[in-house]
Amino acid sequence: MNYPAGTAYIDGAFVPMSEAKISVLDWGFLHSDATYDVVHVWKGRFFRLDSHIERFARSADRLRLTLPVSPGELARILAECVARSGLEDAYVEMVLTRGTSPTFSRDLREARNQLICFAIPFGWILKPEQREAGLSIVLSDIRRIPPDSVDPTVKNYHWLDFVMGLYDAYDRGAQSAVLTDAGGNLAEGPGFNIFTVRQGRIATPDRGVLRGVTRQSAIELAAEFGFPLEERVVAAAEALAADEVFITSTAGGIMPVTRINAAAVGEGRMGPVTRALLEAYWAKHTDSGWSTAVADVLPGR
Ligand code: PLP
Image 1 (cartoon, helix red, strand yellow):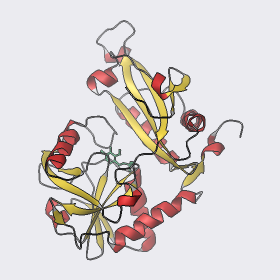
Image 2 (image 1 turned 90 degrees about the vertical axis):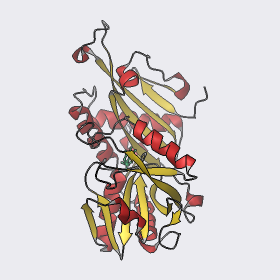
Image 3 (image 1 turned 120 degrees about the horizontal axis):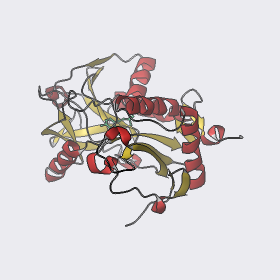
C-alpha cells in the first residue's frame, strides 16, 4: 500500500499518513457509519474553515455521533496536521466514525466514536491545466439514494451510487457522472454540486444534495456579480439545453463542464459566467473574510 505525504491525527496523536490505521471492526468501515468533511488549504490559508467545521458538527449531531473535541480544538488539530505535513496546498479531512463497542456488543449506543483528521496534498476533480477544455460528464441513469433514506445534507460515505455512476462514465468515455432523482431531476455527482446557466440565469438543485461550501461560495459570488440565480428543482433536460454548466467542490473549486453525454455544452468551452465565478473564487483565497492563515489557528501564535 502506498501512502501520500501528509500527517494524520488518530487516537489522540499526530502520525505520518502511513501510520494512521483503524480497526477493521470499526462500524465506520463495516457499515459506512460515519460522517466527514473536507476543507482545503491554499497557499497556507484555510478556505472557509468555520463553514466546514459547522457542517461537520451538524452532521455528527444528526447521526447521533459525539464529537470528542470543541470546534476550536478541532480547528487547532486540523491546523497542526497541516503544519506538521509542511504542505502549502492541502486537502484536509475530518472523519468521525461510530467506532466499536469495547465489549463488542451490537448496541450502537455503547460504541466509542472515533475522530480522525488528516492533511494530504491537494487533489483536483479537474486540474487547472484542463480548465479550458472542461470536464466531460454523463447524466447517469443511476438514481441518487433518496433523501428520505440517507440525508444528503449530512456528508456521508454512502457512495456506491456514485461509484457505479463513475463506471458508467468511464464506459461512455467521460470523466465523471451526475446522478438524478426519481423524477429525472439533477441531484449531484461524486464530490460535487452542479449548476446550469441559460440566457444568463443560473440554477442549482435545492434538494437531494449536500449543501456544498463551494456551492454556497458560488451563490454568494453570483450575488456579488448581480447574476440572477435560483435554487430550485432543475430538470436533467435543462443541463442538456444549457449555455454553460459548471460544478463546485472543495476538490477543485468551480469547474466548467463542456460535454454532457458526449454532446457539447453551449459552444463546448468554458463560458463567461463560469469564468467570472471561477476567477472570483480563487481571488477570495487571499481575502481574510473568506480564508484564515494556518499559523493563525495554531495554539500560542
Ligand atoms: N456533493 C457531494 C456528495 C460531496 O461529497 C461533495 C464534497 O465532497 C460536494 C457535493 C461538494 O461539497 P463542498 O463544496 O463542500 O466540497
